[in-house]
Image 1: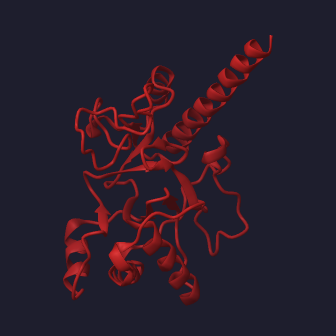
Image 2 (image 1 turned 135 degrees about the horizontal axis):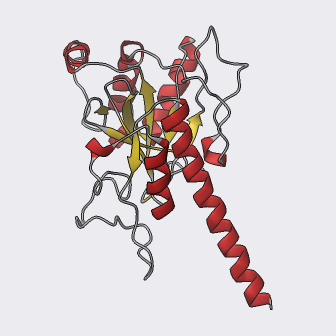
Length: 243
């Protein structure tokens, strides 16, 4: 009896986790009109849970990248989103960046933590910040390659650990399971407004969508200088954070 109850509890927990991912994916796609698609996911069984399910043994983003379907399949259609995550309930939620969707800038977690401290001290309002133990990503308003090129041209040096996710890019969103750990919000999304501090936020990592309006996003020009400085100033580009 104890074994049966244990199995039922595990099944219930798995269903709960799957429901949270589907709920989050639907909220992103339908309420915010962010185009999403399922990531390739992770292998299961045989102690290989943290390995990417794609055929590349040295995958740089285990589980958290498009494979089949490809990035161009990203959509805001609720029926497609339901079909995908009904058939692949453990798939990460991947945002196709650029166009009308948010872009992002990602950096090592230690450098990201230092950058957030610097932004807070300067009174800079940030948008959503996505985090895994190894990398953080700041979501920003859509930008063009021309604008990004001009901003980076003004820098003396741009560390290779700093990555820009614009048109044709992607980033995994909470509560996606990835090889680097489960994705979470370091800074939860806030709706557009003067401060956004008192408004309700989307708790996608808990499976509840609370905000029908799109989150507020900063312009990349307001964050790039600090991100470059902190990435360059962190020994080794930063490493893994424990949380």
